[in-house]
Amino acid sequence: MQDDQIDLVFKAMAHPERRRILASLHRRPGQSLFEICASSLAENGQPLSRQTISQHLDVLEQAGLIETSWKGRTKAHSINLEPLRAAVALSINRFL
Image (cartoon, rainbow, N blue to C red; front, side, top):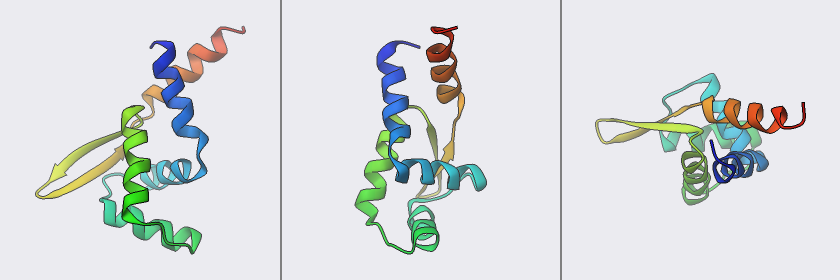
């Protein structure tokens, strides 16, 4: 993993809404955009637009923290923790 990929991972983790999305996907993988939007409303009490959630999902996908698959015409999102584990290991190992 190179420094620019590590930067993408930590940038993705820096936003609280993206961390909430990852936590939701960790509890229940394979969610659609609609399900992620609904869980945002249920957990926070404040609705976020589909566009906003989609932008957060794009950042998470660029960092490799989520994987997508298609179930018919529905795009399903699941968490992938390997890039986070690698970024943390490489960043911490530099100082040990």
